Amino acid sequence: MSKRPKSRPTAARLLDGRLHLQHGPIDLVIEAFGEWHEVEAAYAQAFARFGDILSTLVSELPILRKPMGVAHPLLRGPVARRMAKAVWPHRAVYITPMAAVAGSVADEILAAMKQGCMLDKAYVNNGGDIAFHLAPGHELRAGIFVEALDGVARLTHDRPVRGIATSGWGGRSFSLGIADAVTVLAVDAATADAAVTIVANAVDAYHPEVQRKAAALLDPDSDLGALQVTVSVGDLPREVVEAALDRGAAEARRLRSEGLIEAAALSLKGIWRIEGSGALAQVEAG
Image 1 (spheres, helix red, strand yellow):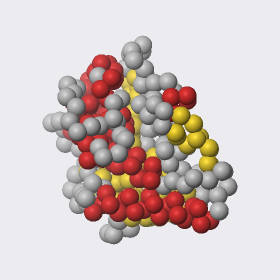
Image 2 (cartoon, one colour):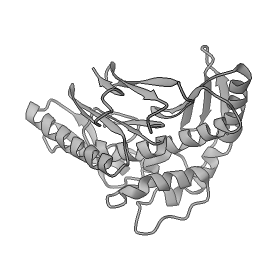
Image 3 (tube, one colour):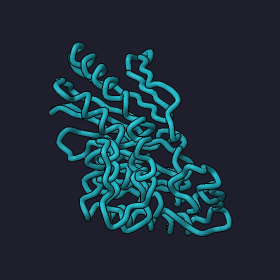
């Protein structure tokens, strides 16, 4: 996220009718279901709310890039406040509000869409971090991708899940761990985004086939600074893979026990772990 947005927010309709909103690094794909006029009103409200999201975030970047400490940061923007709230439970480790930026933006836009609109269901997909709305009797399915469609999260109205987030060492954000992919289901997208960072970082191993570099060398603006992030993962012995997944699964279980996530699916080198009793019907790993 650059210090000064140089572009303007844009909106376009995709060929299948979905709404595409883009401004700088923020790239949203949105779909709503319901009566035509309700959907169009929701799309208009999404774009209206989208206008100052990036500029407001940029104005508070110095605070958002600082690791959480003993005092809750004082932030003005609603998206920034969502970010800080989501990472606050994880403040015992190195984490900044930026760990929840994608999910927080998705939550904010979805909230704007729902204001006064009667929708059957809707989702805001911000690069794989998804906020969604479900009216009674409706459901959505979200694919879990590593190299192909490897699993499906079945999201229903009667479960306390309204956010899904995915992270891994080869994704668009840096990771301290070696997971190919970790997907987390939580009460909202911001909460899922923060939690998936913690779980993905825990899927880790020190091995000659794992290469790391300081985040600042890869991106001078990274909030991770001198922390070593994963840049490549070569062939690993089965026992190393299993041990790394066990570490991540243990972290996912801890977060579930604290009520911070509903379920998690972890993948490394074609091996999976799924955490979440009762969530196995929702997360069906292939």
